[in-house]
Image (tube, rainbow, N blue to C red; front, side):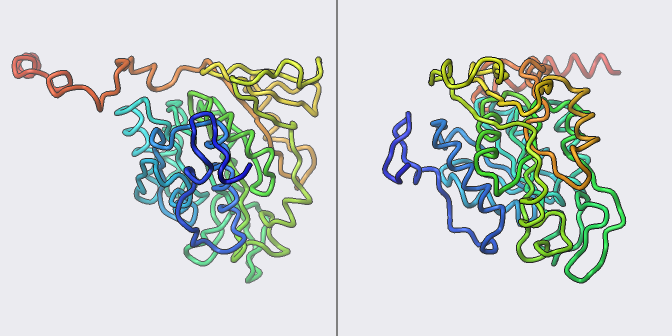
Length: 341
């Protein structure tokens, strides 16, 4: 596509870009931002309908580098899920996109993360996972693999937290993992997440070129290129395009998402079904070969009820309701007080 090409709502790719990145040259986070720009442009998402949310860390600077016309809120360290919950409940017409890091999510924000996914809040939650704390000079984070080394030679003795397995166990309804250098797979997963209407967790291995891109790292570019094991060959076909003749019968699994869009999975394994939660957890617990990183769409449940369903919210966004519709009258409050006396 050229910078002048228009999408289905008449916008060019330039309408989806943000400020100039101040992250290190070659940082995987920049590649993820590029895939987000492409996905939103190609799907024709109105930038003003998107709420970008983040916490603290290198990853949480990313929303400044895409979709500058969108809403944005940079929350406290690890507290992005609470802000996302409030934003989604106040205005369900927003498309919430949270960008976080492995430290922001798996360490200080782990409590907030687990409650967001167990509620199946309608939000796209992208974890830019490099296994280190880049802003504080590269200490191991909670997703670093046991045995991984820092540039100083220090070895990580602790097992990692698998955010995908955790998300599936607790109720997220769309869970996948990718690599920032795998453009095609990451783009398909992002488009599927945009079309999904529950919690979409994408754990994206994103090498830190300054503190974690060396021979002893298990989250470096070289290591990931040698050890990535895709579960499927993914492709996303928007609902407004005919997909009937693009995939051979018997080799594809088609999943219908909430908005009618379809995610087509070109399976490498004949028997794998991403709608099977138990099998997804089993695959995450036992990667194909020791030391390899399994990527792909692990689990999807388009019909899972979301927090919005559970709360039985009115159709109109709460943010648009007049004060008299959201504030109980004095007599209602007096009745409650009388009942509690």
